[in-house]
Length: 294
Image: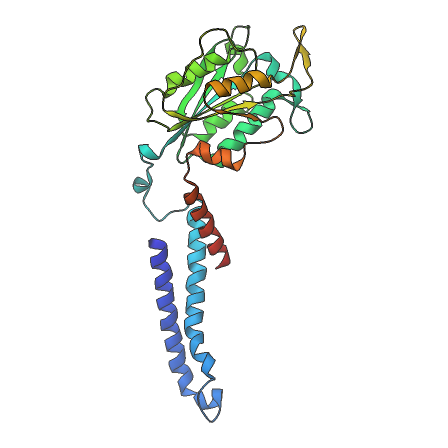
């Protein structure tokens, strides 16, 4: 509303300036336009077009400013309402096999590095204004590292190589423990307001009863890292991305499996994770395009 008000004010001021300019030009009309003392007919529309162009430039710049984080509203009125918040719980595998190097487009990244790259990219694309991040590290057990934070620096520090594996006793990777921890964290959130992102190289699922997630989790993505075809040796056995167990876990949780070893999450996946309405996304893009055009 403020943006439109400023643009309209600029248009009115432009018309006023054109009117003053026309008054001054009238005094020397014979010198400027010849015996008729009048310009060609099309010139009569120039003042309006010039004023509209100036207003459009101002409107475009203000829209671009707003889309990139600026605002004319006071901070108190910009507070995000509870119903607008989307929670993202990241369950990060920190088992020793995640240190093996067979991930990424060229296979030269460790699985842990690839997992962190995918998560960093996802968080950057989501933005932190309406997103609250929780991180759960898991190995044989699961431990919450941070719960429901909107501080991007905290999340970045955790993902930038914090040695989380030292907090666990060596054993067998248990992905069910990560699901249980996520369920505990999100049990009080409103329905369909959360997403679980579990990233791992996979392992055989336990024989115990599978855990369930509360209704607050509307989306689940199980992300796989590591080469799913060729294994690497660790502790006298070959380790590779266990697609079968990851797909099985995704199916149990009514979610989707994504092979993130070489590709990041798609825009469609990201839209579902963020809980965004597609029409709202298109509206923002349309405003940006019109602003650049103007």
